[in-house]
Image (cartoon, rainbow, N blue to C red; front, top):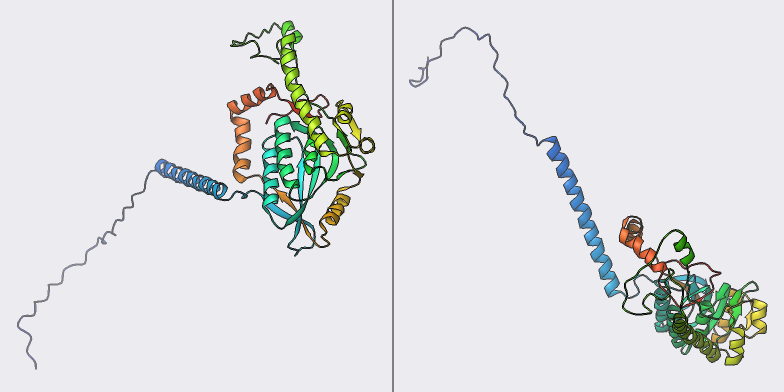
Amino acid sequence: MSAEPANRPAAAPAGPASSTPAAPPTIIIQQPGRFLGRAGGWLFTMLLVVSLLANFTAYTSYQEYFAADATLNERYHSGDHFAAEKLAIIRVSGVIMTPFSDRVIKTIKTVLDDKNVKGVLLAVDSPGGTVTNSDQIYHELKKLSETKPVVVSMGSLAASGGYFVAMGAGPQGKIFAEPTTWTGSIGVIIPHYEVTDVAEKIGFKAAPLKTGEFKDSLSPFRELTARDKEVWDNILNQSFDLFLTVIDDNRDKLDKEQVRKLATGQIYTAKDALENGLVDVIGFEDDALEELKKITGLSKARVVTFQHPVALWESLLGSVKASSDPAAQWKSVLELAVPRAMYYFSGGLPLPPE
């Protein structure tokens, strides 16, 4: 029989069983208040949105700064898909004003720099626009037509400034007009509306503070004086003479006196325009394109057009600004009263603000 270890503790005496069970452990979880949680969530969301917008704006600015043609997209129109040599269609449609004119000029410069573009079809469907913007497009087209052949195709309306820019094709540029084209309207107009009688009836009187006799000239709230008419007649005549000179320089079939006789401001049908030497051929855009192929000698060519898509930030912010910015709305009202010399066939309707 083995001996018990000397250091083994003695067994505890058995006592009566406890009737109270042991309490479970307590776990305490501290949570932020409901209000603080919501505020934190909204704050985080707003910071995220602001960060995304800031990064998007920075990226857009980067693209616009380092890529001159970032918003100019070339599109296939017709012809040989894989041909290296191209024919470009440049479209001038709608009222010729900024920012539209800037986009047309950008397209012209792109086509001029593209060595693969061998010829240009200028498709015009416009009632014209401001003297300045029409002349700017004409100026760039003249540089283009001195390097590459340009053929013009007129759509439903190629009037006033629309006809002016068509002269950019140069003396050798053939002009096609569709059978239903309206063209001509050679002349200048400065829209002016006089409401002095209406203002007098409702008790409205304009009293501008000005520094010179002509500072409020063409105000709708006062009648034009004889001296006002002298000033504006001089401006009109200079713009009118520019129009006549541009046609004379680019239409071998007409001299300046013949152009002056046609420059009554009237619209000409395609048939009348052909008889008067304002256009060369009655035909459609496809006919003009075929003529361009003959001139360039390209039996196989890729015909391309160009698009200027609206930037995302313009879509997102433009409508908001227009509807909620009082300054933008007031600016639109003031724009309607700004005097503009126009190569424009309007039918008496006012121009939209720029």
